[in-house]
Length: 319
Ligand SMILES: [Zn+2]
Image 1 (spheres, rainbow, N blue to C red):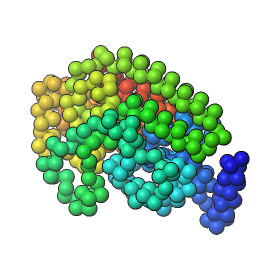
Image 2 (image 1 turned 120 degrees about the vertical axis):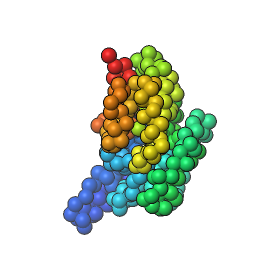
Image 3 (image 1 turned 180 degrees about the vertical axis):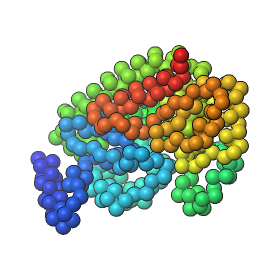
Image 4 (image 1 turned 30 degrees about the vertical axis):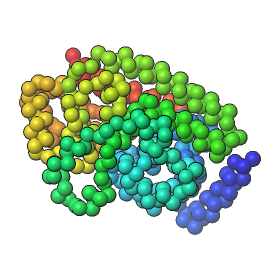
């Protein structure tokens, strides 16, 4: 009956706030689970289905690398029962507010002991000599340092499963009265994921060896898992334009016909990608690393993986 008391308290709080503010969403003050990024919301919403609400902090179209929390985001984080995020090396913008939380109120996925051994090195080391992007501020360098590892963990089906397990475990602690439903949700998630993984493995197998460039260095976990073979990326951070030397190198590889595709992203279609591919046989595709158009729900994470797989194969397969 703890949940009824909690709900009642929050409803009262919500009513009081809405009288004071005359606007604003009561639902956002009641979010039980707040995920930093949409794909983490996909995983969390599968586990919370029919039990409690999951919300996503980062708005569609925003970059996971450069976001500033609004006052309403801070409120949402503070009122959440559980915050799910990658960790300060990905969502630097959350570091400060989250340090104020008790550890039982948050899960930093990169810090899970089961996840740590699976971390892949990032490939930004080779870009540290690419100084052209540093013109816009010194502040960015300190706000946005890239760590040693690739932190796009949601693109790993293995890490996704471990994340679901960790979210399930934490929610069973927080709401033991819902254990049966939470257990069933985890079981459903794992079964769906295993089926999608099998499907993707066979869809993507014939694409092994096809060369391509991605826009930003996000896809390493997915590519490694499914045996895809990228030639490289334009940039580590989609907010930072690649330097002239890198563009020249990419262009050289495209011209030499080593690449079949270059992939842009829905919110980043910089003219440089088109310019670099112009006059070559290289096809242009789009990869969406955040699943922008997909709605949260029990099967949303596998929809997200399937969409990404379709985006790879429709461009790489060609005609
Ligand atoms: Zn990224």
